[in-house]
Image (tube, rainbow, N blue to C red; front, side, top):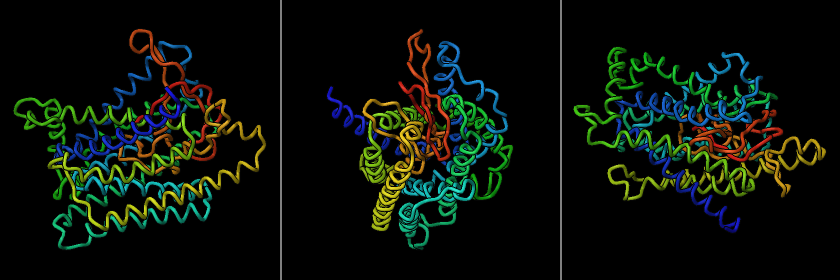
Length: 440
C-alpha cells in the first residue's frame, strides 16, 4: 500500500473513531442517567485497570525486553497517589456534569484545557509562551464563552435551569485537576527514565481506589443530585449500577445496552488513542494539527445527525460562532508553537537537537513538539485525561508502549522508554517505538 494512502486511511480512521468516541461518551452517561453517573465513572476506572493490566503485565513478565526500569519501580508511591487524586478529581467532576451538559458543549469546553495547562505550567514551572500562543489560548476561552452563553443565560431556554448550570460548571471545572495533574507529572518525573505504560497502570490502580473513596461527595447538594444522595443510598446505587451494567432482570436496564455502552466506550477509547499515537509517529506535526483541527468541528456537529435519534442535539448559531472562534484560536496557537519551536531549534546544536527527537526516523523529520499536550485540542473527555499523546491529559495520556506474550507467546514488539524533558510530553532518547498505545 502506498504510504500516502496508508496515512490518509489513518487520518480517516482517527476522525471516525474519534467521533464515535465522543458520541459514545455522551450517550453512555445519558443512558445510565444522573442516578448512575458515579457508578459509570468508577466503572470506567475499573475497566481501565483491567485493560491496562492485560497490556502491561504480559509484557513485564513474559518478555525480558519489557522490563520496567528499576528507577521507576522504586519511585515513592506518594507520587502515584497525588497523580491519581488529581486524575480522579477530574473524572469525578466531568462525570457529575456529563449527563446534563450537551455533548456538543462538552466537546467545546474540553478545549479550555489548553489555556488551563498554560496557566498552571506558567505558575508552577515558569513556562513562557509567545504572544501568538497567548492570543490563541485567549480566543479559545472566548469561543467557549460564546458557545455556552445562550444556554447558560437565556431564560427562554428550557435547559437553562440551576441544575443545568451546575452541570456545565462541574464539567468545565474538571479541566483544572487535569491541568494540575499534567504539571505534577512533569515535575515528578522530569529528566527520569520512565515506562509510561507502567506509570499509567499504577496511576489507574490508585485512581480506582480514590474514585470509590469519593463516594461521600455525592451527598453534597448539587453534586450527584439537586438534594444530594445520602452516603448509604449512594453505596446502594453502586450495587444497583453493577446490576444495571450486567443488564440483569429487575435491574431496570434489562432492555438497555448498558453493558455494550460502558465496555464499548472503554475499548473505543483505547483504539482512538492508539490510532492517535500511530499518527504522531507516522505523520508530521502539520498533519497532526490538521487532523485535530478537523476533529473538533466534526465531533461537535456530529451531535446533530438524525441517526442519533433521541440523543440528537440542536446546535444554535452562537455555538457555531464560538466553534469558529475556537478553531481560529487553536490554529493561531499552533502557528505560534511552531514558530517558537523553530526559533529554539535554531539555537541548539545538532547533537542537542538529536536528544530532543521523539522518534529515531530515517527521514530526518523532528518530532520535538508532537506530544505536547497543549499542541492539540483536547479530544473528548476520556478516562484519564483529555489530550492524546502526552500525558501529559486522564487524559496519563502519556505514550504507552507495550509488547509481550499476549495471545500465546506472540504479541507486540517494542516498548516505550523515555525521559520527560522540561516541557509537557517531550520524550528524550526514546529507545523503541515499534508499537504503542495510551490509556484514556
